[in-house]
Image (cartoon, rainbow, N blue to C red; front, side, top):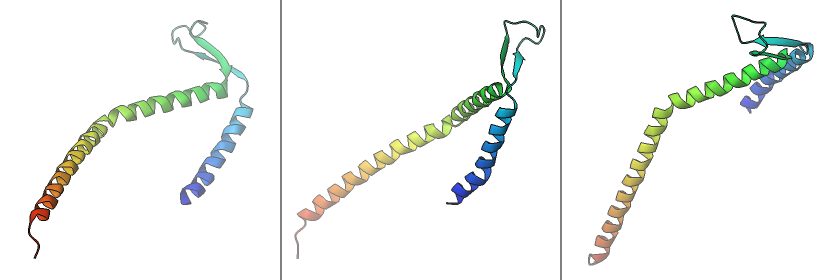
Length: 110
């Protein structure tokens, strides 16, 4: 419940600001990727400013998530290893429990 309220208090105003920003920045701008000859048309892109900012945001999110995924690989590897070990220990415990039940079943009752 608190998370929903916080999301509304933060994300709703950010969404409104973003929509206002998009409406206010519809003019076309040129993104030049050649620092030595900015007038070169081969490495330049004409688009509205908000489109370029959305593309930069999406690329940043993708790169950030990829870096996070790669950096957390050791934790996933350890979790897989511990999961396999837990399954192995559970199987061994079940084997001993079954053996104990067999032994208990063979004992004479009083």
